[in-house]
Length: 213
Image (tube, rainbow, N blue to C red; front, top):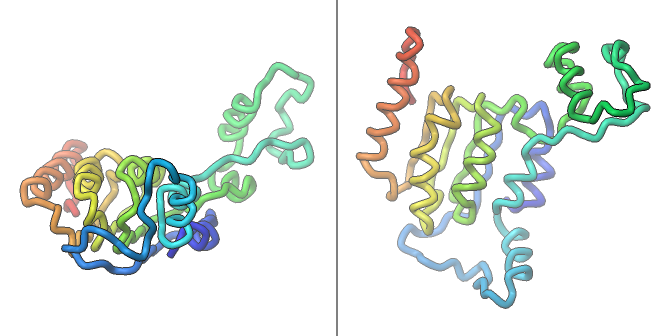
């Protein structure tokens, strides 16, 4: 899968599960000859080539939701009490008023929010070697409803990114039930034990203990 395909398939508010699988690479292969070597003098060209061949930060972040700009032709019935004559009321205030007055589920459908994470519950990033921890965590931070996450075979060339993502999972995915880290040699027993303890503490602190992932 590449960025364009990911955006085409994933930019829908009703999607509940996504699976992105890149071509598998040997764990001991430090370089991927199928992808161009990025040099400081040709970053844009390299980024475009990489984006067309595999999933990168750009493709993943394009799946995050964005509210469309408000247009007069699309004002909904539940906005009837909004003062249209108040020119000083900015777009953010209108949205805040709108979300307070309308049913949230109906609101999401009506606004046609771009992005898949409104209802996303299952995400699989398989053999993905060109995603950064920063981008993945930014995406997951908007997808707190995810219950199933797979990182199988990913981050083989950037083990620190993989470790950073896993270590922060209790903060960004409090509802996680299943974590697949098959073929992830960078995951240490210490790190796994640490997040397990965090999930246990997170789910027992409120008096309603649930099993950790």
